[in-house]
Image (cartoon, rainbow, N blue to C red; front, side, top):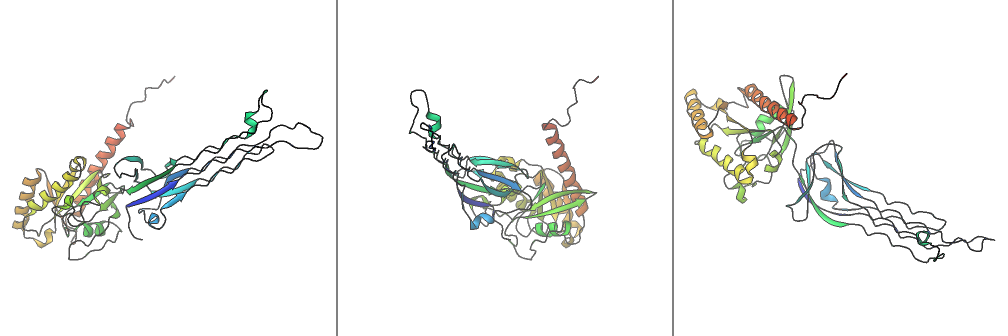
Length: 348
């Protein structure tokens, strides 16, 4: 399945059915009076987050979604049938943006969440509603309300606990492949990852989701390489795992390039908790490891872990550090939601 995280969609809700002008006509009933029914309501356009999807590829082949119109009213006080709703089924983590691609209308973050994007038009009144003591045979009815036409953009931001950052060929895909069942493309040349990958990682009876995005290069925020097209997929992560290629000549420069690019993307992403790792240490001597670790510690101002994805040296230590950061983030979210507040309700 191909990966698609941004698409343009045209939607239209159903128009309401017209009201009916009708009179009761039966044998031996001279003045039957008006009996025109109301029109049915137009269908809604509804977006729904479903399980089992991690791409918007379905919207590449169908961009137009029109709900059904309501049926017109009929005689004998019969109301027209309501139009059927139409559903846009998307993966959790999808943002619905206005036509300008900047205004976020909705953010669908939970499986099963449903939102009405365009409400169907109301049905018109039949002539029965216009009957009065001074107008006992009205020949007036209302037309149905028009549906809503609009153009929207869908943008997917994968929901993961941890996100991988680094220069091309820093070992992100290798790390994901050795720690999870994900099978991203791994090769000895840059930009082997062309679209984000997700993997479920387990350590100490705890599982969390890791997202791997294509590597960044200097000038990505200005469109170089694959640019910053995929940085949105790590915006929702609790922690960022920054892998630095230990075989690079200047690891501090590589570190600063990535930090500069994510800071140019959004301040929020630049301020996220990060774990810095010197990768590919199996290709270095002990002196080189010590020298490059010291350079990275000076550049990052914090602890630097050492790891080799190929030999798995230090991998479990890095996973435990990720687990600790994710647990702290979940605790902060729980406190923000009031989950740890003391129950002060009355008890006998």
